[in-house]
Image (cartoon, rainbow, N blue to C red; front, side, top):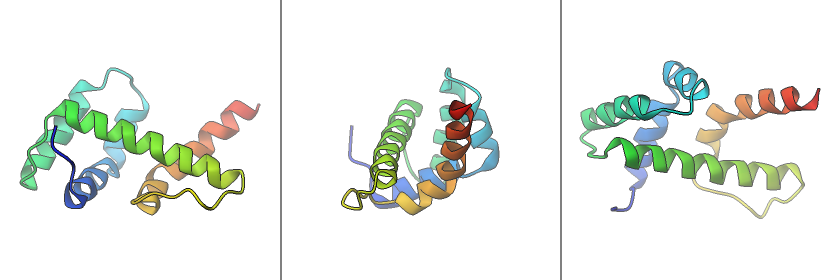
Length: 104
């Protein structure tokens, strides 16, 4: 598919940062319906992406974020990514919760 622009990714992250969307995403694996909502909201910004593209981008961003985060946790500052701070605001608390769950 066509490459996501910075504007499109920002819009996706803005929608993703909605608490309601986050709760839905955290609670499910079968998330087509949620990404259909995300795609519909992107449409309002004039961004034409289908739910599959949204889900793929979401997964890729999340994966990239996690690998940067774990590199940083192990003391490496070399690895970084665009949108890290935006994603950290969304996922930072969540990964901390996950970490404390898996510790005990």
